[in-house]
Image (cartoon, rainbow, N blue to C red; front, side, top):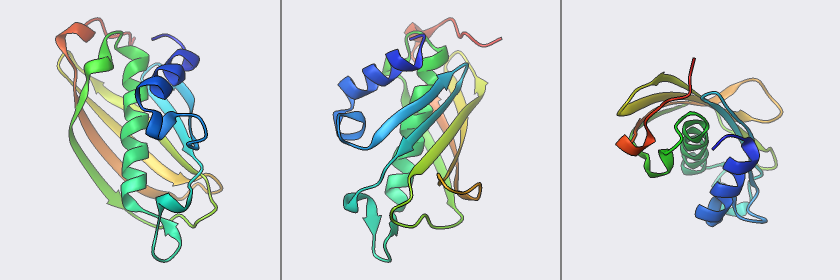
Length: 146
């Protein structure tokens, strides 16, 4: 997939609970092994204490990493997460949009390593740091990274 529009359309079709209409999650950037997604959390995304839940941050990081993969691996639709490590550093209060910024730091033929920072949209403070490994299917081939 070449453009952020194509990637956003694909994600909305294939993952409607996350990227479907009125779900609050959007792809803002998806280019050259990098992606940024934004989530406007609802009450379903909150935990006691009126803060965004850890599983919500993890979901957003994983979905954003997948968007980054789609930006450089033509056939990556079958790519799967093989490892995800997350360190939570601070909370994100209810009412704040959540932003995940991911970058592929090692695009390989079979595995891709991706880092991600999750934060509230109104701050530069990192709420969670995530490192993920994705298994890339042989059909993905031809990585488009210079």
